[in-house]
Length: 325
Image (cartoon, rainbow, N blue to C red; front, side):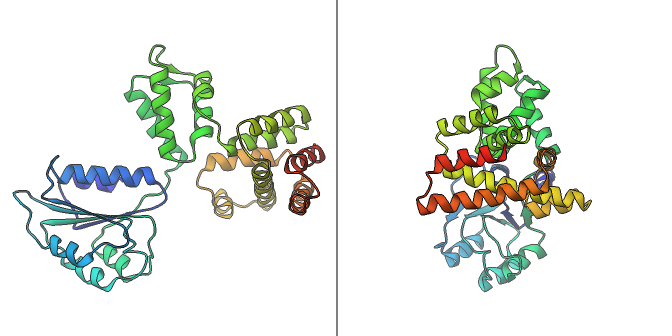
């Protein structure tokens, strides 16, 4: 993203921008920044938009070869075309020949890095992978948004906010807008405001449930479980979340015992956020590896009982919680 911002500031626009990755917010932000910088508002003559796998590439490239109409650049925006999912000989051959008066912007969900098309984009230095930022980068972005709005946030409020909204930057932005408006009078975002306005996601609630199990607090564990049911989460879904988290905690416990690096742990768990890993490490220390393995076996047995009709899903989760505590 920084490279794109620099291109815009220095007016050094590349012939092609391929924006891909798992963070939809960043792809949308970079796309909007490029279009806003290259095309005047209301200029429909010099902006052509193509969407979906049925894009007429012949017509699009013919347009790219057309000089802009009283403007420095002609911009072609391609979204979800699938042109980088596999080799496209026509596009791969055209990329090195893009006229200096044209700029092609591709916003794609999937790419094949081995394809000729992707490699051609690499050769013109037009590939931008927009993945989830680190915890530190996200914190800087969040605090920047809050400061710009003239608000402050307490440390405990930030921790609660991050836990509830870390699923995506889109969710973070949406929840931030609510909090900034809600706290207009006080000027400070508190933990109480976060807990009032920001919905807890299933992952954060299951962390609380597992912590209660690790503390051997059966009353608290059942309270959290029933609260999850009241929030319309299914018992089968809660069972699946518990099984997934016990499996992850067992991996964390085993890798910690083997003194594996944080980087290796993140890779093994397919996690992007070190903060979530630290939370898992703390939770794993409340259980022995034998307990975690036993919890996984119980979860599998109860899952089979549900599918065979021997147990209801709610009863199975209650038995699982009782057995662990």
